[in-house]
Length: 282
Image (cartoon, helix red, strand yellow):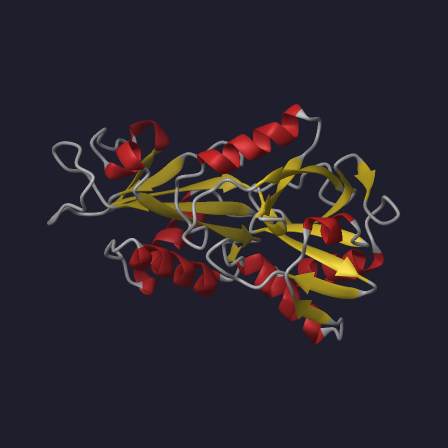
């Protein structure tokens, strides 16, 4: 993600990013007791906004943090950040923590107000977004509630850094011998022309872009199914894709040093990429 654009939002105020201040006693800082969401914006239009706000609300509910805004209020904040930062293609990052207390106690405190922070960053296409990524596989050692979009991302960060250290672009995670997701993206494979997606569970985040891609594929008559994907099956896939709000759908052409399929972006990805690029700006 690029540097923050000039205007940010903190607890009801839009202000220059250099003036943004949050208490060191905030539980998001002390415990990662916070959730986040990233809303992609293309040509000034937020994509899948209702889905992102629903996922934010679900994450807050799972952590028993009161949602500090209605959907209408969130939309106003997002639209103001888009406008104040010049519009175009941006990502709106939203973070809500349980709030700040006077000390440090593991138990949920009563009577504190959630802390809200939001910023915009520019979305720029990556050099390999259409030519293909290289990934490694790693054991998934994250916590057991990956369906909550928590700010506690240390395991993800370590996995992605391990991928970079190995000369790859990212890491795909394997838990108990089966695929979960990538360091910061959902994963889909293709076998004999059929798209395979792992069913949602507490072991992976319900990806909004992944859901959009599957919907576009079904609408285009491309066969899709949900299934558990073993590590061995992953390595034998004809195509592998990574999906995220800011990257869209990106092909993987090498995994653990081996070519995926022909070693080039596959024909099913070519078709879905075109459909996604058209759909995201409608």
